[in-house]
Length: 205
Image (cartoon, rainbow, N blue to C red; front, side, top):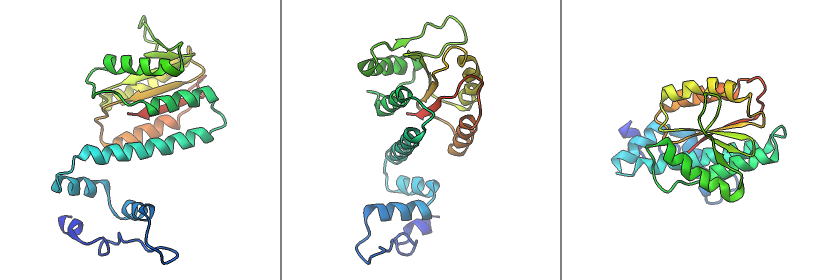
Protein backbone atom coordinates (compact mmCIF):
# COMPACT_ATOMS: atom_id res chain seq x y z
CA UNK A 1 0.00 0.00 0.00
CA UNK A 2 2.85 2.37 0.81
CA UNK A 3 4.29 1.72 -2.64
CA UNK A 4 0.94 2.58 -4.20
CA UNK A 5 0.70 5.82 -2.26
CA UNK A 6 4.21 6.80 -3.37
CA UNK A 7 3.28 6.47 -7.02
CA UNK A 8 2.61 9.62 -8.98
CA UNK A 9 -1.00 10.67 -9.63
CA UNK A 10 -0.66 9.52 -13.26
CA UNK A 11 0.70 6.09 -12.16
CA UNK A 12 -2.25 5.64 -9.81
CA UNK A 13 -4.66 6.78 -12.49
CA UNK A 14 -5.36 9.93 -10.49
CA UNK A 15 -4.49 12.39 -13.24
CA UNK A 16 -7.91 13.07 -14.81
CA UNK A 17 -8.32 13.82 -18.48
CA UNK A 18 -10.50 16.75 -19.41
CA UNK A 19 -13.31 16.06 -21.89
CA UNK A 20 -12.32 19.17 -23.83
CA UNK A 21 -8.54 18.77 -23.54
CA UNK A 22 -8.42 21.66 -21.08
CA UNK A 23 -6.60 21.62 -17.75
CA UNK A 24 -8.44 19.32 -15.28
CA UNK A 25 -10.51 21.16 -12.69
CA UNK A 26 -10.50 20.61 -8.93
CA UNK A 27 -13.74 18.64 -9.31
CA UNK A 28 -12.04 16.43 -11.92
CA UNK A 29 -9.33 15.60 -9.40
CA UNK A 30 -11.89 14.99 -6.63
CA UNK A 31 -13.81 12.53 -8.79
CA UNK A 32 -10.62 10.75 -9.77
CA UNK A 33 -9.43 10.41 -6.17
CA UNK A 34 -12.80 9.09 -4.98
CA UNK A 35 -12.77 6.51 -7.77
CA UNK A 36 -9.21 5.27 -7.22
CA UNK A 37 -8.33 5.65 -3.53
CA UNK A 38 -9.92 4.04 -0.50
CA UNK A 39 -10.48 5.92 2.75
CA UNK A 40 -7.95 3.60 4.41
CA UNK A 41 -5.28 4.63 1.90
CA UNK A 42 -6.03 8.31 2.41
CA UNK A 43 -5.78 7.92 6.19
CA UNK A 44 -2.42 6.12 5.94
CA UNK A 45 -1.11 8.78 3.57
CA UNK A 46 -2.22 11.52 6.00
CA UNK A 47 -0.42 9.80 8.88
CA UNK A 48 2.80 9.51 6.90
CA UNK A 49 2.61 13.19 5.94
CA UNK A 50 1.69 14.14 9.53
CA UNK A 51 -1.60 15.63 8.39
CA UNK A 52 -4.23 15.76 11.15
CA UNK A 53 -6.57 12.94 10.21
CA UNK A 54 -9.50 14.96 11.55
CA UNK A 55 -8.98 17.43 8.71
CA UNK A 56 -9.73 14.61 6.26
CA UNK A 57 -12.62 13.05 8.13
CA UNK A 58 -14.19 16.46 8.82
CA UNK A 59 -14.09 17.30 5.11
CA UNK A 60 -15.69 13.95 4.30
CA UNK A 61 -18.42 14.56 6.89
CA UNK A 62 -19.05 18.08 5.55
CA UNK A 63 -19.39 16.81 2.00
CA UNK A 64 -21.74 14.05 3.14
CA UNK A 65 -23.82 16.56 5.12
CA UNK A 66 -24.25 18.76 2.03
CA UNK A 67 -25.31 15.74 0.00
CA UNK A 68 -27.79 14.59 2.65
CA UNK A 69 -29.32 18.06 2.97
CA UNK A 70 -29.80 18.29 -0.82
CA UNK A 71 -31.58 14.94 -0.77
CA UNK A 72 -33.71 16.13 2.15
CA UNK A 73 -34.71 19.28 0.26
CA UNK A 74 -35.94 17.17 -2.66
CA UNK A 75 -38.18 15.04 -0.45
CA UNK A 76 -41.67 16.46 -1.03
CA UNK A 77 -43.11 14.32 1.79
CA UNK A 78 -41.28 16.39 4.42
CA UNK A 79 -42.59 19.70 5.74
CA UNK A 80 -40.66 22.93 5.14
CA UNK A 81 -40.38 23.37 8.91
CA UNK A 82 -38.76 19.95 9.33
CA UNK A 83 -36.28 20.75 6.54
CA UNK A 84 -35.42 24.12 8.11
CA UNK A 85 -34.76 22.57 11.51
CA UNK A 86 -32.53 19.92 9.91
CA UNK A 87 -30.62 22.60 7.97
CA UNK A 88 -30.15 24.65 11.14
CA UNK A 89 -28.70 21.64 12.97
CA UNK A 90 -26.34 20.91 10.07
CA UNK A 91 -25.14 24.53 10.14
CA UNK A 92 -24.47 24.29 13.89
CA UNK A 93 -20.77 24.22 14.80
CA UNK A 94 -20.15 23.60 18.53
CA UNK A 95 -17.61 25.83 20.22
CA UNK A 96 -15.63 22.82 21.46
CA UNK A 97 -15.48 19.03 21.39
CA UNK A 98 -17.80 17.82 24.12
CA UNK A 99 -17.56 14.62 26.15
CA UNK A 100 -20.97 15.30 27.65
CA UNK A 101 -24.36 15.00 25.97
CA UNK A 102 -25.78 17.62 28.29
CA UNK A 103 -23.23 20.30 27.34
CA UNK A 104 -23.62 19.61 23.61
CA UNK A 105 -27.40 19.60 24.00
CA UNK A 106 -27.36 22.93 25.90
CA UNK A 107 -25.30 24.70 23.23
CA UNK A 108 -27.40 23.22 20.40
CA UNK A 109 -30.59 24.37 22.15
CA UNK A 110 -29.32 27.94 22.39
CA UNK A 111 -28.34 27.86 18.73
CA UNK A 112 -31.77 26.58 17.64
CA UNK A 113 -33.55 29.26 19.67
CA UNK A 114 -32.17 31.96 17.37
CA UNK A 115 -34.42 30.70 14.55
CA UNK A 116 -36.96 28.76 16.62
CA UNK A 117 -37.63 30.72 19.86
CA UNK A 118 -39.98 28.08 21.27
CA UNK A 119 -37.18 25.47 21.41
CA UNK A 120 -37.13 23.71 24.78
CA UNK A 121 -35.03 21.10 26.54
CA UNK A 122 -37.33 18.24 27.46
CA UNK A 123 -37.57 17.25 31.14
CA UNK A 124 -36.87 13.52 31.26
CA UNK A 125 -39.85 12.25 33.25
CA UNK A 126 -40.05 8.97 31.38
CA UNK A 127 -38.58 7.04 28.50
CA UNK A 128 -40.75 8.55 25.75
CA UNK A 129 -39.18 11.99 25.45
CA UNK A 130 -36.25 13.07 23.27
CA UNK A 131 -33.79 15.72 24.48
CA UNK A 132 -35.07 18.83 22.63
CA UNK A 133 -38.50 19.90 21.37
CA UNK A 134 -38.62 22.32 18.41
CA UNK A 135 -42.25 23.23 17.70
CA UNK A 136 -43.28 19.60 18.12
CA UNK A 137 -40.26 18.15 16.29
CA UNK A 138 -38.22 15.93 18.62
CA UNK A 139 -34.41 16.17 18.67
CA UNK A 140 -32.53 13.22 20.17
CA UNK A 141 -28.85 13.89 20.98
CA UNK A 142 -26.29 11.08 21.28
CA UNK A 143 -22.62 11.37 22.01
CA UNK A 144 -19.95 10.31 22.28
CA UNK A 145 -21.60 7.72 20.04
CA UNK A 146 -20.64 4.04 20.25
CA UNK A 147 -22.15 0.88 18.72
CA UNK A 148 -24.52 0.33 21.63
CA UNK A 149 -25.84 3.90 21.26
CA UNK A 150 -26.79 3.29 17.62
CA UNK A 151 -28.55 0.06 18.53
CA UNK A 152 -30.92 1.93 20.89
CA UNK A 153 -32.12 4.40 18.23
CA UNK A 154 -34.85 2.23 16.59
CA UNK A 155 -36.45 1.55 19.97
CA UNK A 156 -36.44 5.25 20.84
CA UNK A 157 -38.01 6.17 17.48
CA UNK A 158 -40.88 3.74 18.11
CA UNK A 159 -41.57 5.27 21.54
CA UNK A 160 -41.10 8.91 20.50
CA UNK A 161 -43.45 8.57 17.50
CA UNK A 162 -46.43 8.59 19.86
CA UNK A 163 -45.61 12.13 21.04
CA UNK A 164 -43.82 13.64 18.04
CA UNK A 165 -45.70 12.75 14.83
CA UNK A 166 -44.17 15.84 13.13
CA UNK A 167 -40.85 14.02 13.09
CA UNK A 168 -37.67 13.08 14.93
CA UNK A 169 -34.14 14.26 14.18
CA UNK A 170 -31.33 12.21 15.73
CA UNK A 171 -28.09 14.18 16.22
CA UNK A 172 -24.94 12.10 16.69
CA UNK A 173 -21.70 13.75 17.78
CA UNK A 174 -18.21 12.35 18.36
CA UNK A 175 -19.09 9.14 16.51
CA UNK A 176 -16.72 6.33 17.54
CA UNK A 177 -18.10 3.57 15.35
CA UNK A 178 -16.47 1.61 12.54
CA UNK A 179 -17.41 3.52 9.32
CA UNK A 180 -18.81 0.40 7.63
CA UNK A 181 -20.79 -0.52 10.74
CA UNK A 182 -22.09 3.04 11.00
CA UNK A 183 -23.28 3.19 7.37
CA UNK A 184 -24.90 -0.23 7.70
CA UNK A 185 -26.88 0.72 10.82
CA UNK A 186 -27.89 4.17 9.59
CA UNK A 187 -29.02 2.78 6.23
CA UNK A 188 -31.14 0.22 8.05
CA UNK A 189 -32.77 2.86 10.27
CA UNK A 190 -33.51 5.19 7.36
CA UNK A 191 -35.16 2.39 5.41
CA UNK A 192 -37.33 1.15 8.26
CA UNK A 193 -40.96 2.24 8.61
CA UNK A 194 -41.86 3.36 12.12
CA UNK A 195 -45.64 3.41 12.81
CA UNK A 196 -46.97 6.94 13.13
CA UNK A 197 -43.60 8.52 12.24
CA UNK A 198 -42.93 9.48 8.62
CA UNK A 199 -40.27 12.16 9.17
CA UNK A 200 -36.91 10.84 10.38
CA UNK A 201 -33.50 12.37 9.84
CA UNK A 202 -30.10 11.37 11.25
CA UNK A 203 -27.38 14.02 11.38
CA UNK A 204 -23.75 13.33 12.20
CA UNK A 205 -21.86 16.24 13.76
